[in-house]
Length: 299
Image 1 (cartoon, helix red, strand yellow):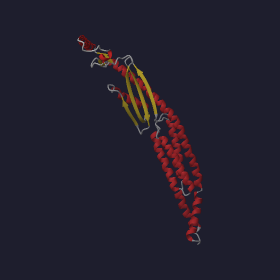
Image 2: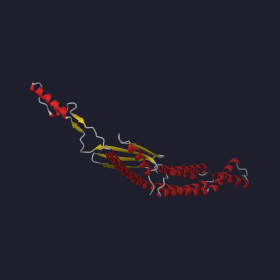
Image 3: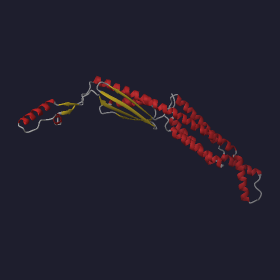
């Protein structure tokens, strides 16, 4: 198995001698497994079985099932009330003999209320009904299989996109590491310049005091820990993608991991002592947000 998306569509059709039916299954992203099922009146008994079947195939996503049923092509939806038609013909014949009405037309006869009646659907016997419901559920199984295939196909593309975003985040971590390495010297230089401006040419602080001030500022501005955590998060993200390959649902865990990614990027930006490192932090936040948007659709 591979990474699965929560977006997809599946459709399957079935029929017996009297009726035909179609199952449609649509899926979009959701925080948990949410199932909405619409079936025609009289088939409510199969709804619970349909929901259970969905739960066997999917762990997350908002899934809509729709069952439509149509009468077979050979079925007669209407019947002629021959007794009423015969009575109408006799009455018209009597009126015609009296010269009071024109000869009737077929269209006129059929328009007489009650001559054409909707044929009542005869409920099938229990054995036929059970066989039909079993066939309908088998058709649903086919629709769900196609939905799973669609989600898997979308998931394969999604996996490539996630890998690209993780690669960009890793590259920015490398650039941030190089920039962070120059921070102590930059802090020392800036502190000396600021002290010189404040003291107005008087002798600057001695080397020991300056070293202490620089050490405290460097400690506050040290982003190596944040970069190390970002690298650890990248490794964890790759572990999750491998777990998805084993059929495990990873979407919620990946979503929480994106929050940790963002927390480290925010801290890096707040600690940055140089514009260049701030820019890298902003790029990191942008890449992480793009990653999170894609993760929202992972099962």
